[in-house]
Image (cartoon, rainbow, N blue to C red; front, side, top):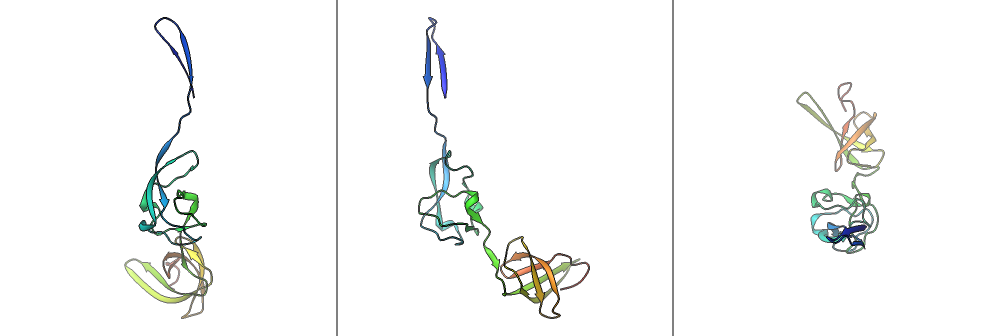
Amino acid sequence: MRFEATCEHGALAEFIVRAVLAADVLVVTRDLRAKEPLDASMVTLARRELTAIGDAVSAVSDVDGKASRRTLRRGQPLSRRALIEPMLVDRGATVEIVARDVGVEVRVSGEALQAGRRGEVIEVRNVANGRVIRARVIGPGSVAPLDTSARSP
């Protein structure tokens, strides 16, 4: 940055300074493998320059339960780009199809035809009737049908 200053006697002085913007951000406390789930014990706050980390994470709640997209080294700052939701349903796994509608809840067994993370829509085969449905991943091994009003699981 460039600054100019004028003193009382009219003399002009020019200053050029380099500013460093830093903040406390989360860094990993040990080496992490790609897709490894994170928890609060794996991160700590450390002061880092923000110019190198465009989307730095500073709240533990933003990483708890997520996974690393790629390998991370000890001391490396966490960015939002480096985080993904962990895989909650594996292809071929048995899942619970949970349908809720107007206070009624129905649970049946299904087979995941695709892998999925929280919020993703995957295809699931209802093992009771063989019907393939589209369902949203709602938790580990649990899915909810996209349309519960038209049919039950």
